[in-house]
Length: 147
Length: 147
Image (cartoon, rainbow over all chains, first blue to last red):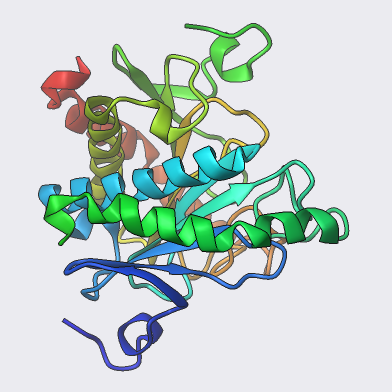
């Protein structure tokens, strides 16, 4: 089900990485956070608890696979997972690789920067994005229920 | 397993609401956000993907039960779920009832306030906290795997 006027019903929501029947994964293009993915539920639901138990499991196992790829490829200082949706109340999970050198660490990405971007470090992460995208596609394609 | 020097290994982490073998739930006492609960994994693990599949399911079903109680009792504008752990890298999930009148809405709770606290509205939520705590205890006590 789609809702008129909802940005995540009417647009892909970012750079397409993977599409399943029930969800899609996009790479967000957020300045300063290159390894920032979002799992977007395809139907318009607002809250995680609006999903059935089977869909919650599918959703979080997919989030876990994305996290696992980020950890393996990037060895981030921390992974941040969040579903907020205060601005766009359509279920989506943020999966963000955080580094001790990033502009906001250890604060969440949504606040004020604590330091300037480290352009050299960001460039190193950006060079890995094609591999990351491919590994996330491959990992999610192993989930039978997602296809 | 506990880690020396970890705040969530060495302290309860907030007002105790529920304790299971593998996790505990506390109510955070965060000014401006009275209906702010945290599920804290008892073992010292940093990332969600460090849990086994069975433990991830247990963890998120418990988070879902907390969310469900918040929705039923408070009808919040939105529920926010997040595991960040940049400051304290010991797995904990924030479960936060958000309201369109709260000091930060629609921004995340971790940034700068957008408006002053609405003391009357906060007092109405605070009066419901004993019922919320009790309903969360009762809901989590129905989870066989949590006991």
